Image (cartoon, rainbow, N blue to C red):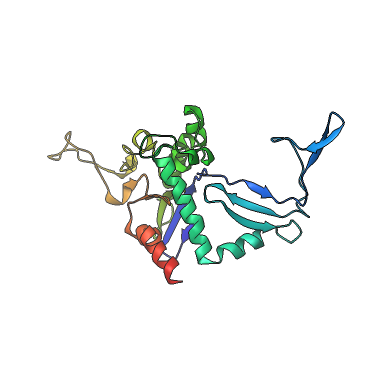
Length: 258
């Protein structure tokens, strides 16, 4: 929710991730097990318990071979202090954004390079499997459950609240990390410009020249389904005030000027 004295923006947030980076645990010595009476190094894919108090952990951004140290689990509010320190450096933040954008490009090309070969970076993105996995685990508004539920919630926010506070402009927006790429044609393209209203806003045209030819509604009784669809990878704006607040151009300018 965003508000001031004249404007209230109600947001429904749906943000299934594009990638879930693994945690890497640095061990002081190899893990072992006893097999056939002999102590041997633990086999791959074994179930183990790591001592995170002693052994440091890192967030591993595999396709960049980049590690973000989280330290040992021995400080208050771990691992947030280490993460906050890392992203406080703008150059580090830029690296994380670039890494995410790289995977966004891989996802947008359906996991194939310019020659049609499989790009192995696809395997660390969500929704990289078959059709069911793609629809249930796809990022952002490409996840069909999220774009459908999100659309209903935005409609509900509008229908329940837009008319309720005289003098206050109430807007309803759908927010996500990822603008629909594969789901756009099926779930957004034909409804993104939809307007809605209610019977009580209709103007009676009985005995007028337009009776039977059209239905007319009061201007302040006609509402956008979405006042905006706001995502990192693309947005739709149907209100200039929202665009001024949240456009990517404004964000980049603010980020660079801080």
